[in-house]
Image 1 (cartoon, rainbow, N blue to C red):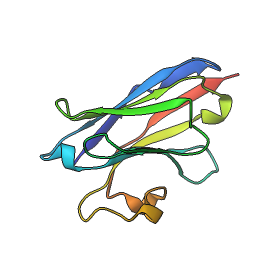
Image 2 (cartoon, one colour):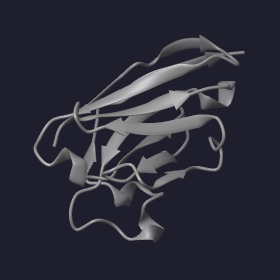
Image 3 (cartoon, one colour):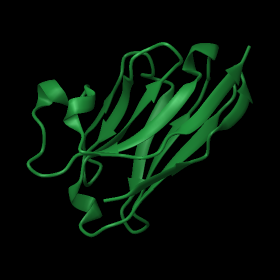
Image 4 (cartoon, rainbow, N blue to C red):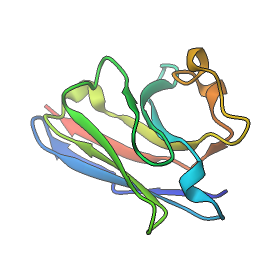
Length: 127
């Protein structure tokens, strides 16, 4: 599986952006996918995860109520709609995918819960 993230950019605080992650490979709809982010000098933090058919979604505490994950399996693409952006959302955002055997619940908010990582897309929120 190869992941290609796009949609990052510069936005003012309070604004919105939508990130996309296009995945190559077969059986895309089997793979839970998600996003992490990493700000300068900080560890990678969990943003969210969506199961293969989109029926279960987890969000990190810092983005709940502001970010929305979705996926379109006909396009092999996962989306991250980011609203009410804050300066602390500034980071490189990485698209990730979990592969069988899928990880246990205690791992899905950590980097070890994912087998594939995209190259990252920069999001900068100006205050």
